[in-house]
Length: 247
Image (cartoon, rainbow, N blue to C red):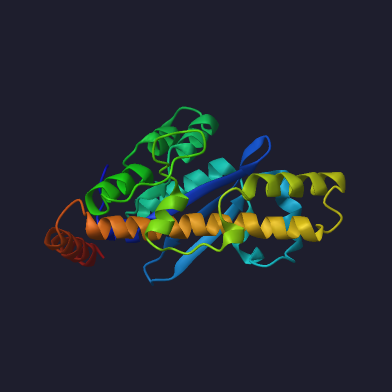
């Protein structure tokens, strides 16, 4: 799916795993805008070593965190996507690969591996840049020569501002330090000031990845839509008509 429409992007569910050390799926950020135009954001914490952070509820933004089971989270997101006709977006193949590693083969596995359900945002962004910003060339990753199509580079291109302290390269070390402190005290002691700030960095980095990805996809859907604006409006009218007459 190299292109999307703006309505698909606006209604999308955006997910992003964060991890540190040996745990690559410590938590998952999930963001969407509901039918009342209210932004919904949550972070499901799968790493049990981090659950004391959730239980204490004494850090900024703690209302967004909840201990969770990855399989149950994936089941719930599938129900949300199917029930409200939404696509799920992730940037690159990382989320798909982690889900493929986690789930046993079966119906839920098949749904998440289907690229029509879990959409890779990066090829969409690359096509949009080729068509609409052909003169822009991203700098390569260190030691390489080809363009680095990172989410951070695309967010900078669309002028989505991420505070420097929440930018790339802050999450893995922060989560590893937090886990080490919590395990050492069995979760009984408060986090050090350094670890508390590291946790804030991790969760806010995750928020900006999800929210920024949504803004990027809306940009792509607006400037390089899969179908014309007229066709999108006709489809929305038809969907609204059907839903009214099915009630």
